[in-house]
Length: 110
Image 1: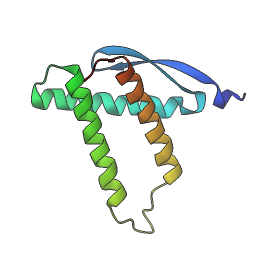
Image 2: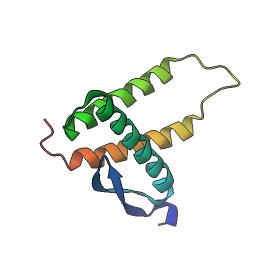
Image 3: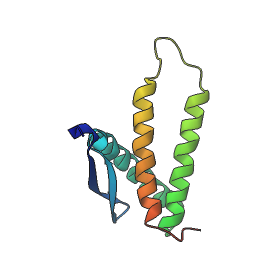
Image 4: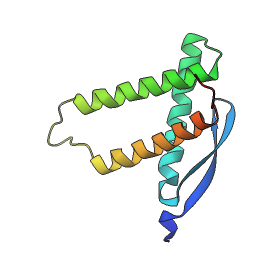
């Protein structure tokens, strides 16, 4: 197994809570970027809504990010501004891993 394919466990910090998330070594940087993005979005939601429940904030952040993704997919693309689909797929996978890690720690979310 190459170093890039090796699975590592990262300690991530989201909205004042610590989580352990597994990812491939090659995805570490993308996952850390996704964690920073998610944390920022969660903080914005908490500040705007004064919602105290972390579970609700996580769900709202996930819905907002999914909405952004779907809008981006539907937007027409200019040839000069074409999206790097491989990069987008890698970032989405990293975000998916981060969200899975968070939701796994909240078994009784619903």
